Image: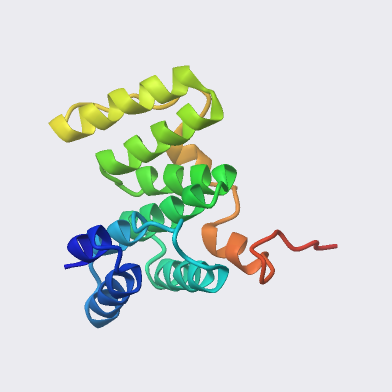
Length: 168
């Protein structure tokens, strides 16, 4: 229903349908799909509501690859690549699918890092086939999680405009 509603430009209906379904019964794939709903036809209040929902689900399911991917896709759509990259790397480290690798590759393309993009696209294909994944050379994905702030820490350190808070 959400896919068809989006095609018909019923963006609020699509989002509401997914929100109700996810709140009624957690589903990783629906949380990931939620991040693909278009933002370009929404006002700032609706975009903020989507971000808030995605963050709420991420707080409830911090190790969920789907929650991480959905939130990352929203960040990517808002042009927040560093935040999206961190979330995507975490989604992959938590067992994320080829979709997470593809979203990471898309981000690298937009960031102008073609070598990393090619490696991520190849890993997306490998993940689909069940082959061994090659880590990005500059980061071992599992090592990146340890010692870095979690998404929950990052959420808590942002103000209402989704900007980092200054801590002393």
